[in-house]
Image 1 (spheres, rainbow, N blue to C red):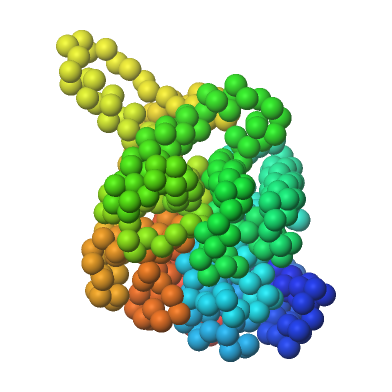
Image 2: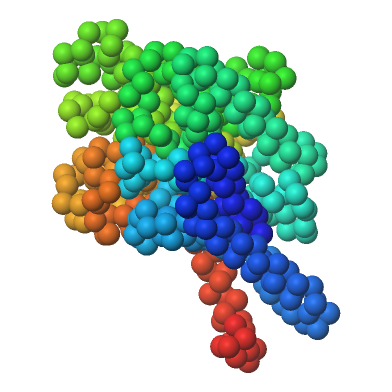
Length: 482
């Protein structure tokens, strides 16, 4: 709560550069101070009653519940500035906040008339959401449950022997790329404010833009190339990025996820380019330019675009849906099923086919290569991966069907929009905007939350909360105390 209060106050720095926005200062000061004050009160109560049986801390040590609370609190506080200022309705503000913190990028705001302070607020939420609340807390303070919380938020790798050093290393890399990205955009001719926001959102694979037509409005090949590089950095595992910064090129090249990513791009960028050329009458150079950017944007789950998808051929739309479902690197800022899981599933499928075709009964143990080295694909990993993929695809099917009902759209449009929400991508086929109905926004919000926290964290967090309530009831704790 203290951390969220500080983060929501950061947009006030924009007032030094855009003083006309000072009329919105209280819209940020009120929720920021309120969150800090409540957090301080709870800390003081917890410390005062620690010796007299105050149990809130031990109860909240159930990692998934703690992570779930942190994200819900961040979303609520992040939405308040939009509400106080009258920029959005309550539901729209919650939607924009969820889209920001989860690094999705679907938006109900008209950025052409949105004040600078709110544009910064949206992008800064995405930048912080890419790291995650727990990651930022670990940099400042370590507790007994820090490692459990770190893992529960979806960070599978320790880059350093010490968890705090791991978080600090990631933070330094993340911000170093931020500085480089801003400089590159400025060199390409983008304004400083736009450069800062677009770099934050590209690295966090978020996709919020300061322009109505996203990156396509600049019509600049240099800006598109810089954005592609930043999106690929954002969708790459932090452990792989550490190897990259240490110039260990061979180790990077051997990582299965990296090779699989470039294989997907090598296959689907040309296919999409041919489809665009045939379906829209583009010349081959223009179609490759469009396909390269938008396929990378979909696979990295960033959500920047160079053109509208309303007229795209069905095949090209299908490729984008597939890329959004696959998603980026595990342990990165990206969403989706994640490339490692898809790679493992394909390895298992190929192994099963080989066993059926081979006359011998030779036992083969498949493996894949992580930044830390070879990792066997054992029964436990196969079971966990299969379980997640089945749940993910099941949610995708249900969400897509519900979207067709609430939005009154075709199945293809429903699949595209919900794949974007569940994969925390942000690309839209035109269903999400200022006039989108409440039902569609609610479905997409659930999709974004489930996608960012990888389904099981939310389910386990809810289950833990219910278990705690039941436990208190059984031991005779009153409902008022609960």
